[in-house]
Structure formats: structure tokens, C-alpha cells
Image 1 (cartoon, one colour):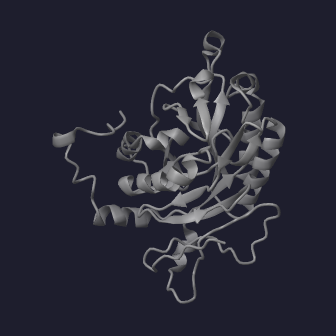
Image 2: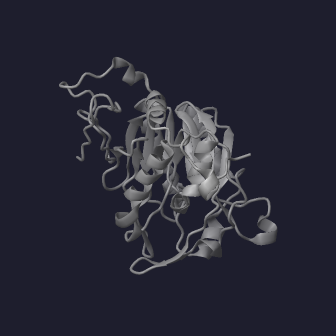
Image 3: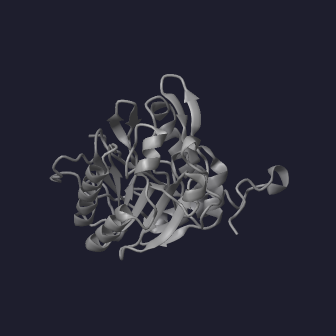
Length: 327
């Protein structure tokens, strides 16, 4: 168990780990309410979010069963919003299989998640859906679409990944997302949820700070990067990038991740986590499929922004407006 201890004035109260029983799933969270620390009881009233870590395969039905079990557990534990990683629906063996398994937003799989959100009374961040868009017949390519469902099962936001991962990393193998995927045309304004205003991104987007700066200037309080990082870039960059995005934007960062071996051609790093606006990792998943839980303290966020007003100190006269605010 990897525990994170924070000073009393910064403690982000999380659900207690001792005595928690979640069959087949692992939970690692920062220890709440240490007896030697004075923590306001109001911290237990803060919104609780769940970050789900899975190992998607080409088997869409089994992937849904795994995700649904985690979502139901998140609801049982009192979360108001659950985050799923990029490619929660499936991870295929090649571009042809990716295209064959893809669906429109109005298809069977999203209908199942719609029903699940209603059943659990839970908001869902579906972090990277292989979407056949309205241009499918013309392009025969898809979008990597981040979908937000509210607790009534309605689609309240969609963001189509704007930065596609076309890279060649020694030891990790080449990736050509553009072989099957079209980049999204725009960013989406942050969406109000019970946990705060969420700015939507997907995986490789985290390498572009302009995107996060634009989202926070548009009002984001939480940035979310559902991901499927590899085993070379993961240990080197995953936590560093997430903490950097949190520090520079003074936002919470929520990153649900794929983990383990998906099939003979691909594996993912895992290490799903929540980072607070100070850059502290306040919750993380252990190895394998599971979930971690964190409370979102927007008063702490506002206090930090007031004490360290970096956005008031920016000098666009010198270096331009990096990350133009969304219209």
C-alpha cells in the first residue's frame, strides 16, 4: 500500500482504506483523518470521485462487464462521478479490427452505459470511445471521443481527441493513431458536474500545455486525461506530466489509465491517479484492474489560486497568449 501523508492544512480527505473489501480489485488511497491530525468534519461532505483502472481487450462484452462492476462499486462507496480510461470499450490488435469494432454514439454500447449511469445515479467520464462519426461513410475513419454522461444517462459533453499519437518510441513499438482516427476539430468548454467544472482531454493531449491553459482560462477546475500509456513512456513521463499540468493550471488532475497486457501486441503502464492543484498525488491505483477514490476540495483550489495568482501574473505582451481562452 502506497500511502501519501499531507500536512493538516492541506489534507485531502479520502475514503478510509482500512477494512475496505473490494473483491478482485485493488484500492490504494491516502490515509484520511490520522488521529494526530485535526481535520474538519466538513471534509467528508466534499464530492467523492472514483478513478477506474482496467485492462481492455478486443472482447467488448467482457470489457463492459469489468467496467460496470467497477462503476457499481464506485456508486456503492458514495462516489458522485466515475472516470474510465481511454479505450474503455476495447483495445484492438490492428487498425482494421479497431474500425470493425467501432460504433456510433447512438449504438448498443453507449446505450448500455446510459442505462448503467441511470441505474447507479452516477455521472460517468467515458474516457475514449471509438466513435463512428457522421462522416463515417465518407472517411471510413473514427474519432477518439471522450463522453460525459450525467446521472440520468444523458450525454452532456463530447470531446474528440485533437492530438493523435503518431510516435516511434524505441522499445515500445510504433503507434499510428491516424491510421484509423481523425483528429477532433475543436476543444470543448468545461462542463459543470457535481465534483466541479471538468475540462476534457485524452492521453497524448497532456503533452500540450496550451490545451490545459485554454481549458483553465475557460473555467476548468478539474482536468481529466484518460489514457493508455506504454511501458517506456509511462515510467519516464506519466506522473511528471500529470503533476506539471496540475501545478501550472492550479487544477485537480484526474487520470484513469489502462494497465497490463491487452493482447499479444500491446500492454499499458497503469498507475491511475488523482493530483491536487499543489501537485501532490492524493490517490493512485495499485497494480492491476481496480479503482482509487479522492475527494475534490474546490475551496482549497480557490485558496491556492488566491495565494499564488499565476494567471494574474502572466505576460502575454512578452510571449503571447499561450492557450487562447475558448470562445
